[in-house]
Length: 312
Image 1 (cartoon, one colour):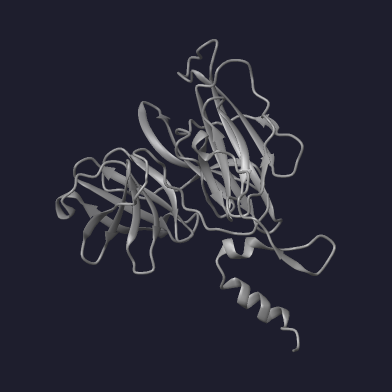
Image 2: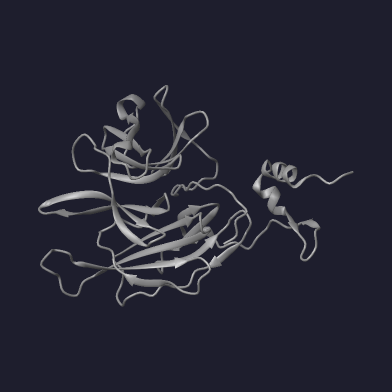
C-alpha cells in the first residue's frame, strides 16, 4: 500500500480531537509514532487564576504572591515557569496583566503593569506610581523600563488581545470630569495608545472589554435595565463600532448585572458568564436560559480556550 501524501495526512489529523492527537507522538530520533499516557503532572489549576488564553496556551497567575507563574498547554501537558518580574519595594495596590501573540514573528508576550502608592502625593491628585514589565516567552528575564500613563482597571479582567495589542479600560479625569477610555498596548512596539470607544447613548461609560469573533468588544450595562454588546468591526476605526445586540432585562425575565460575553455558537446563540452561572442568549427569540453543568463549583471564572498542540 502506498503512503498517503502529507496533504492527506494533515487533512485527516485536522479532523481529530486534540486529545487523540496528543496521545500519538513521534519516538525520539525515528519516524515511528507511539501512544503515550495522557495523565500529565499539571499545575493544580485551583491554586491559580487563568488570566489569558492564546492559541491553546493559558497564562496562570498566583493570587497569593501576585505573580504570573506559568504558561500552560492543558491539552499536551507542556508548561513553562515564568521568572519573577523585577518589582519595586512595597506592596502592589493593583496588578494588571495581559497575554498576547505576534503571529508574524511567532512570538508570545506577557505584560504586567504594577501600581504602587506614592510616598508623596503630587498636586495632580495622582497618588499612584506604576511599573511596566514585558516578558517574551523563551527569554531569560523580564524587561522593566517604563511606566503607564494610564490608570488601568483591575486584574480580574485581563487584557483583551486583538490586532497584536492588549486592551484595558482606563479611568481618569479630563479636568474635573471623570472619563473612561480604551487603552491599547502595542505588543510589537511596546507602547500605549488610546483606542476610540463606542458612542453610547448617555451616562458614564461603564463597560468591560472582550473579544468576539476576532473583534474587540465592549459590554455596557445599565443596572436592572439592559446590557449592550458592541463590536469594533474595523480595528481602530471609531465609526466601525456596531451595537451587536441588546439584552433587555424585562424581556428575558432576569435582572442582569455584570456579564462577560464568551462566544457565539454556530446556531447564533451567545454564551455569557453572569456571576457564578453560565447563560445562553438567543437573539432571535430574545430568550435567556441558564446552563447547568454537573460538578461545577459555586464560584468560577469562564475563559474561552481552543485546544492546540502549541508548546510554550
